[in-house]
Length: 362
Length: 262
Image (cartoon, rainbow over all chains, first blue to last red; front, side, top):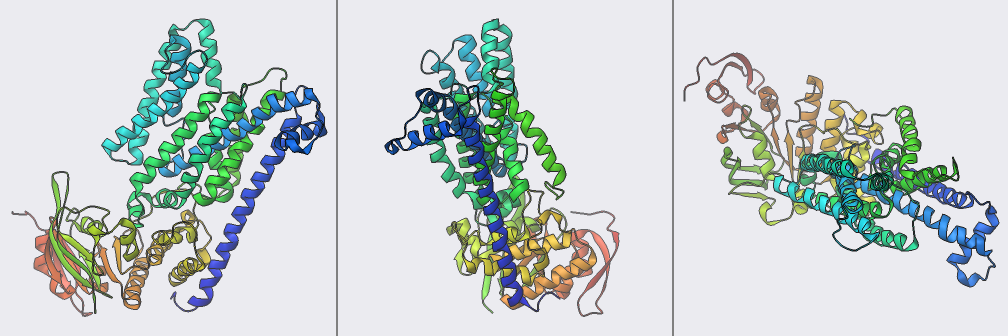
């Protein structure tokens, strides 16, 4: 059966594949373009009506101080110190949590995994609660204790998971089971702290747990950006290996020459580092790390070479939209983005899941 | 014909349970070898020891002149293709992308036009052109099996390992897949080793049958030599009648042997 027109058909399926990947690149660029537009529009929206011109001048003056544009000082303060940091942090946080989720889902070949289902976020929450309620800190003082505690507990949790997983064999099951056990344990510990907390402390903890972009500073942004710049290229370099692991499982990946243990360990570690460094400054922003990769997969498929970069843009887009809604819908009250993201993301995800009838997970 | 695969004294244990003991086997290019034997006799274990999915305890495996314990997984993957029993559930991936993974041992990041050509050729050889950009998850069992074989062929292997390639297929697709295996073995001078349950299919499509019993090789030889009433009684504890009309033995199972002594 099967044998005759090999040469002709061979090149035709290879050409069709080139068009297929070109479409993915185009779709990714469209998401990116949409992100740029949404981010710029978001800078013009807010309590004070500044107008596109004033905002644009302020941004250009900031990026290119030599341009010699005259900027209204009030506009400059609002854009440069309030709106832009918030939006840029939203982009970094959404993008970072999304690629962390995408890499974790691929490395553990499980669609339910994200930094929150694997214990990293619960670790951070316990660290923050300890600082706020018990006044216990590992490093630093004052308001920084909450941050350093959140970060160190999140990283400690992920190292603990890795350590136990190494003892048990670096399989997806090890990570999931250990992660879930730790999540429950830390959840209980945080609950106990909340139980004994005063009302004021409780409010502070709850606020931290909501996750918010209020209070984003350029220093925070620079810190997160450095972590992302280091971690993201390494993750993307593992795209092929993640493809093999997500699509074939460990035995097949090994037969294709992939060192699964190392790829899984490094991806999980980098994803945790990204998540921890973001959560440290924003508090818990759940959902985006779980759902942005799924939305991206529904749009362009599960090839990590395209999925990882496109997830960044998708996560950033979702978070900026959610935050803009959160700070305008009942202005001047700002609803924390951690709450809004689920309100915005869940129906959108649900819609895509229903519309795209292909067999998504089987 | 050149020797493609040499297995010498391979043993393996799962914890304290010994699954394979002192297996010795030599396979030429274009030769199709079937590993048969009851469940737990060590067929799949032997298969996985060849490309170090499992690390054997003792013994040597030599593929195309190279000791596989001395080269990395990537280099092994350039000479040994592996077709798993079935693909587990996964995220949506196109057939072309699935087969492209067979080029993983050769590429570091970018895929060359030549890589794509190798993939397209494997897809064409398996008759999968019309599915090339469909999702792997949407295909039927027989089509999936062909995709997995195409992926292994994209590795441009000297040795092809198949783990129960027919176990989830209806008869037509079983025949189709085994014909394909036979054809690639002959045309590309690949040494094929497959673990298979169906003795009649093994008899029909193999040059050599390796019969395993409790982790040891009980008998090796041509189908006519190995598939005999005595061997099957001893190894499977089943009484069979054997017809040899077509030149190759064909078994008809009768009944389990009442009491197994030993």
